Length: 571
Image (cartoon, rainbow, N blue to C red; front, side):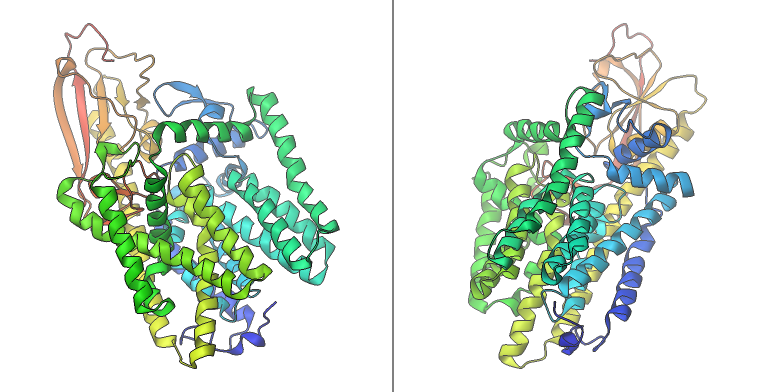
């Protein structure tokens, strides 16, 4: 471990120096709270709905987390068929809900504690790899991938927090030969995998680290059987409960969806690099410090060529909404795609450079962590999204700190001023992206409330298309999701259709008696979901960027009343 005495070189980019760990932990906890606190009242968004419903089911039936029906795609199905995530984060949300209530602020506050655990874990792990652990941690926190993901109540941040502490106990257990550390690591690996299945990747990653560090296999490998045994039991338990094992079911779902929707390998590499560079951010914001001008130029040229190939249709991008970003935004999207792709190249190059230079267990561990996550996000998962890229961001922060350590030692230059400016700029930018995502989420809640005010007491059933957070609020207010498999519509009923959502179908004009709309401006100039700007933080189905800066279209909701003369139900 690189101890605090060794870390007495400048480790905090000119803000503070010679800090002992307790003060650093307190500073990081406060910094996380300051960054995420403003979003604690944010509306539930995207898949938050699924996790909250599972949590409420657990509150009622603790041993049957997915034993309920819902309409999430086109018709009623069981939650066990819909969800592709294990239930541990929903158990945590159920605990928060039972103690503090089910409001947005209560649940978000509970998950801010998870984010603090992630940030403190990043610092603790970084102590083992760099003399600048505080820099590594701030570079992790102040990224769009972390701040946007940690503003949700989904499973991703919790999975990564458990991942970090599992790695800490494993690495420090091997160094100190403390058996209870290795046991704790095995338990935390299990918890990580039962929060999100990607946590299983810790098993081969930590096994490789152990073999590389000890130069041989040993009894320590046995502790990795803890998650293997529990996951096997989980597979049997869910098979008994729901008729199919949820662990293998998620793998089968990803495989089938990938075959139907993904583009060519080159296209997926471009999108994967874009999401990596955009979510981790530091690959291009620190590029001028990390690389020579020639290397920066080469990365920019490759990024530019990739952007042109993607936007001009020279590579098969697979299933994308509207065929990709609107042509009038191609230049704007292309510039941002160039930056994000070149940032992804920079980050992967940083991992390769570190392992080539050091050739030890630490560098191989970080390289495999980065590349394993990238390969999964780009080529294995059913869609490229920021939630899949999220796990590599702490490793990226540690690699950045290691590279800057090296530059300080080799050049004797203090880089504190430059690094401070870049970190502050990254933080402001990342908070801006998180605010844009929050604005989008809040508009769906506002829309549901105003739609209810317009339609309540009119004597008609209110149906709606679309899902995500909008569905949560519409159902909370008494409206019903439209079941396309069995539509039970009647003349005079109202159908609400959000334009920027999923699973939408047009109602034929002959069935519509009147049409109204509500429009909600998005004035922050950034968004995470827009096929016009190519932004698809939650799925590359919307575009090749994790987020976009530009003229964001307003959110529009159509309110249709069915014609009294319609004898047939719209299909």
